[in-house]
Image (cartoon, rainbow, N blue to C red; front, side, top):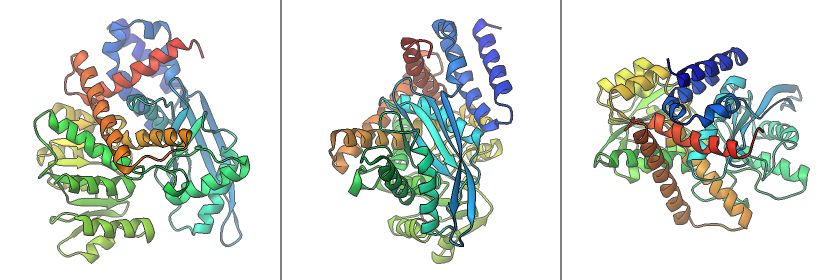
Length: 450
């Protein structure tokens, strides 16, 4: 056993002892560390400076209660978090998630992934993540507003445009960002770019709502281009039906592909005729305005099947875009996708494929774009929003989209070259982890033992 292997095992043992009961975080740490073995073997300075011991430990973890009053006048209490993971290359940057499943493990895994994702964007952003176990579903606008105001009353102490810049994530869309921003402005008496994903009328960026979905498709295009192929004519399975899934479908349509599935926590719809722009408009109104269930799509359009309690991965497809949540593709799902002819997976969600599923895709030589690379378009355009806020300018839709395409191409190139450099050509998982890690690790060494 090499000294680098022994070092990695010691870090994994340390992580397990310090983070017992946090499976998602340990899964993320394991996936990254296993990719770094060749780097650590060839570059002893990372061991000498104890980079792994430091990089797996958040710089700061903030946990706080959020009391708020519901429409019946009753006091409710939720638990909230902000994980400020690593600021070696810039202020903390990462979304806020409002969902009943939110806990310390999930947010630490998301913050850890965010460090490397943000590094890959080429923009000066550190990594963070936050949220609360609050469920916006079934709540009135006034209840959501009161929760957001209480949440921001505490969070405002810990964030700022040069310290920590949150954004949206699951359960935090334009409505929630508006309420959060309004409360921050009220408390601090300043209009500043402390949040991204803002409305274009008050400091937001064009393309920001579309960026994660568009970026996942652009990354897929870059992977396909290595085989002289494209999205055109491809049958695509998409999970989720929120922001990322919606704009994944929109971009696939624009590039000549056909998406045949969407899903939510209730089940999956399969539309063999394809979710065209008219049907997509229905989905956007259903999910963004009426906040209904995807089953209603099957009740509205002819020839559509609804699979209650199922995910989309049993459907025959050329490309898969998991865009819902973590660990939504199991090892068996991955085997089914490969058996049914799937040749590409581009992750719009964060860590949506279980470790066993990742192994299946890599062994089958599937073009597999991991979330930290494939879905980095969202935070990339958040970084562009920050740049526009700092200079008090607004860029055109074409300029932002052009920069997004360039960034996704750059991320693809970094991951591809890093994998090739260490003898793992075509392995975008290893390539993305290595390329993201090296920039952060070198910056940590530059800045000393902090």
